[in-house]
Image (cartoon, rainbow, N blue to C red):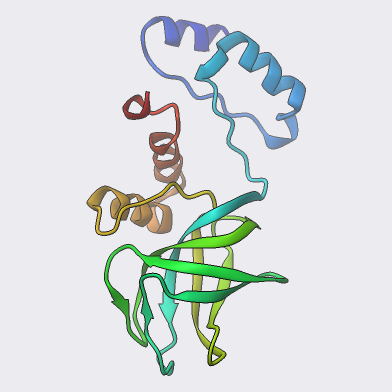
Length: 178
């Protein structure tokens, strides 16, 4: 921890990367006891969230469009639950279009970034489209917010380093959130 201590004394930030197999409860406790609230732990375990940021695509042959606040059945893995969609970059997704959306779920869902899903309208029952989960623990986002749309673009298309930096920027470690 000597290098981290030296870096922090100079007023800079540090990231400690360890293989997940070493990321035990004891190790996290030891690091938190040394650095306190400065510690954020990120790992690839499934996260149970009630809000998902997604790239949503409407099937080209769908008879309906998706609008903000549309209620849908979300099919993810073996689970099916109700969700309400909030389009983030437009008012309506027409057949054949895709866009960013935030799905608010009726209950927590264990999901990972990159997971695929399908949505179906409730009545009449019709498969409308699907997409990919960009953030399974999404913060509340505002519609047409340039910063939110840029963050989603990084989560969707950015490299690993860019995605890690984006996650840190949105976390409690960000200088903007202190």
